[in-house]
Amino acid sequence: MISSHILDTHLGKPAPNVTVRLIYQDQLISEGFTNQDGRISFNVQTLQAGHYKLIYDIAPYFSQHQLNTFFPEVCIQFYLDYLQEHYHIPLLISPYAYSTYRGS
Image (cartoon, rainbow, N blue to C red; front, side, top):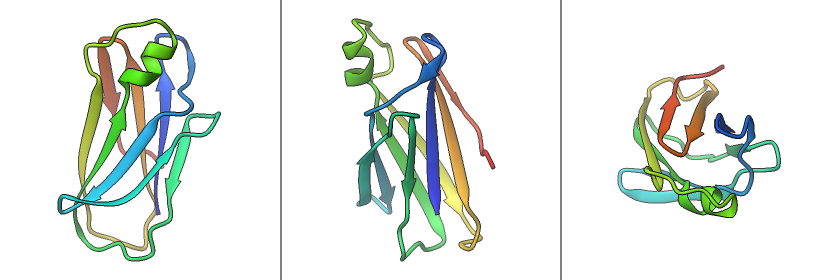
C-alpha cells in the first residue's frame, strides 16, 4: 500500500481536498483526493517494483485560502522494491516551500 499525508505548515493544519495522482512508468494508475485529515491511501493490487511518482495539485488548495504559491504542483519520485511493505510519504507544504520524507 502507498499512502500520503499533507500538512500545511503555513496554516498549521492538514490539507484536505488536494488531488493526488499515482504514476508508474508514466502511466496514471490511481487518483484521488486527500480526506479532511489531509490523508490519502492507494490500495493498488498490482504494485510492481520500480519507479513511481506522486503528483500533488497544490495550487487549488492555496487558492481556496486566498494564497499564492510558488509551487503549484509537487512531484515526488520514489522507488519501490519490497512490495509487501507499506510506503507512507508525508508532504509538508507552505506557499513557498515543501519537504517530504519516508514515513512509517
